[in-house]
Length: 277
Image (cartoon, rainbow, N blue to C red; front, side):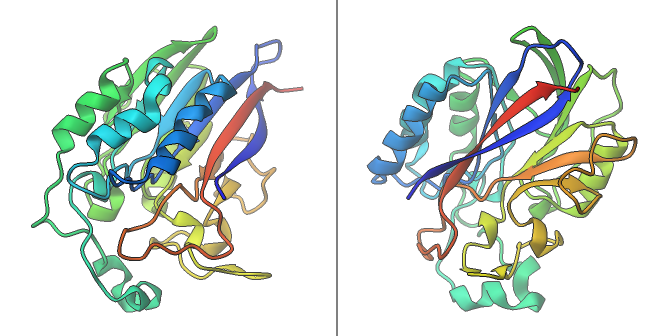
């Protein structure tokens, strides 16, 4: 039940050409997930101008070729990426009910004793020119737009560090795997127009009519997925000084040990950036 969530954001200078961003997150690929690989590969038909990957690509030590197969032609589109915990360490079996217990959420991380081929993954994601934004900044010229970026390593592992300030373009994007509020606040303070994140799986097990029960971070459950304002609660809050758009992708996968999503379809986001009126 893979789906594309489309959103329109009026954030570009008047008279600018629209910009299409494909936001991909939390693939959690294993070598045998051929249907998922095929569906992601066909996303190139959306003709994005820019691809943003917010991490957790792997769920198996032999999954890098599957990531290469899935992203395929998208790797030739301008792109940027950050890593998540499951790009460093493999998942391990655990009681899935612990995910719903607040006192244990911060402890539910991947196992450092199961290292994944992170270097091979970075080489694959960088092979077509995607920028690695791990605790650094970058800049791209995309479809007539100059775009500056600031990215961090996975806040869920406390690896996030904001790079020293640098000159920003008119369109300044923040990229993080886990949407911890300290990172979102820092990126708003840095002047980001839009922040992109994943990690939450949209709550993974959602209650119809209520929504997500957890985000596996300190982000409120009302923003477990979708397009919102930060720090404003209303979707139309961004646009003024001290605020930004926040897109949290519910992602494409799960841990192989808890392969269940309920009322939470696997997704990617297609963000259509438009000129301001």
